[in-house]
Length: 141
Image 1 (tube, helix red, strand yellow):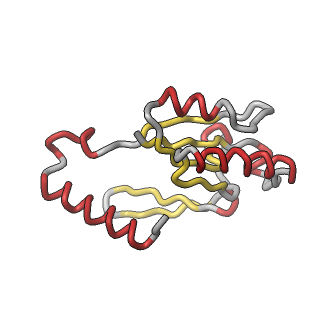
Image 2: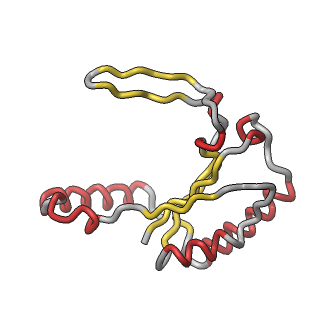
Image 3: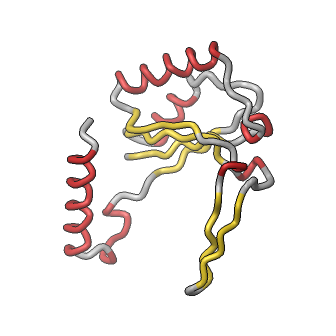
């Protein structure tokens, strides 16, 4: 199963505070362990919402809302995409991450084709397979 690991923002990350060299080194070691174990598919930190925008959809109308956005508990500072056997394995891995100071991490399973049942017709499954192959050819690992 794929799991999106969401690193919640903090007042410090929203203020643009950068991690220390020591924390970057610890995170690098953790990421290396994830890659060696075949867990990590992707992962990045995100700029604060002061450099962001949101687009609200209302029928045919699109409204652009410039950041920053309030309530840091609802914001994301970074993410990983992991391939794991189950949610328990993801939980065990995230417990090893070099976070402290009240950091909060959310682990969310990613939908897979079978989760959509009959709504994902054979034609739509074929389209998904083509897109996956195209992405793989553009981003070989």
